[in-house]
Length: 417
Ligand SMILES: Cc1cc2nc3c(=O)[nH]c(=O)nc-3n(C[C@H](O)[C@H](O)[C@H](O)COP(=O)(O)OP(=O)(O)OC[C@H]3O[C@@H](n4cnc5c(N)ncnc54)[C@H](O)[C@@H]3O)c2cc1C
Image (cartoon, rainbow, N blue to C red):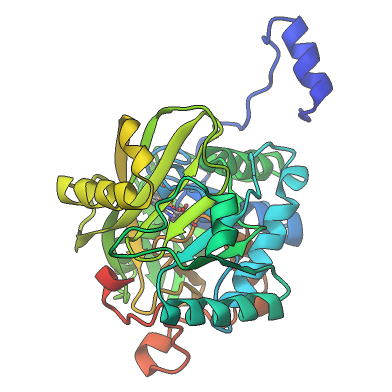
């Protein structure tokens, strides 16, 4: 079924009883050409582009829970292409272009809203760093505008510009940055992959990876063994655990990150704002809730929930930046598991096991990467050659030290990212 305005009208007039299922619920087959482990944003987009761009459809996505139940449905939904380093800059620019045509491509309203992202700066040194970043973004063909304090005040009049500790000097404005509805991105890719014949299998946990003679031959799951010529690990926060099933030790630490939402308010924030000193970022959802987050919880964990010290820290940062936020009631908070890489940049690569591919290390920024990651990973799986936009995301950079992309200059200190 193709979604359209006419369809909404016709279904509405007939009691909304004839909507087709968004995707099938198939039983797993004994064998597939490709098995994708993980039904998050990256796994689903990989399956979609394998089918759409490479005509490969004998594929299963195996998800241990429900589609979109991981970080893809837990993030603060910020989409941007404002990276500085060669490699990252190209990749996120590629992903942004895919975002811009995504709704038409998927025939699904993912509520992509390019409302503009403003990264605030609070010192001369930080301004210089943002000037360099902005120039890199423009050289890459993306957009960046340096705002002075008054320029910021025009767009964001409700901020506290004169706070004594970190007064606001200005901001780097990225007009094409914005937000998207996170669940809809997972659902849109799921529906698109299913329509092209991919089997999406939920409640199917992978418990082992079968290898024979250095080559992957299939997986063991909670719903039986499945043979496969190629297997892709795309499980974000669980990457180290799943890769260990193939005897691989990854340079990935899993950390908790929390998000927070207030009660619904009338429109008040019409951009995405990132506080340059307090590790705090905020936007307003289309339902009216203020959606915000801060830093990692500062300990490695597989629990998708956080702790109160970070709630206090984030609330303090929010109050410093925009004291009006103190009047809103915070309704909900939750956590997700971040696959933190040592240089803050991801991995999209083959592994030492033939036919076994790896996609991970997205840290806290993998939502905006969903289209680009799936597109490039599908290219790698289908052709065994890296896509030009993701060629820098090699796994062996952590063994050799060559080609590290330490975007934040913080090394493996995840608490400093
Ligand atoms: C609070 C928070 C805020 C964030 N904010 C942003 C943001 O504003 N912008 C941004 O770009 N990014 C953000 N991120 C990061 C982003 O959400 C993640 O980097 C990205 O979603 C990870 O990729 P994914 O969607 O594939 O992961 P997931 O959705 O976690 O998918 C992985 C899937 O693998 C499944 N799985 C795991 N083990 C197995 C197994 N053994 N067998 C089968 N299936 C398995 C899991 O159940 C899960 O569904 C945020 C994350 C969080 C938690």
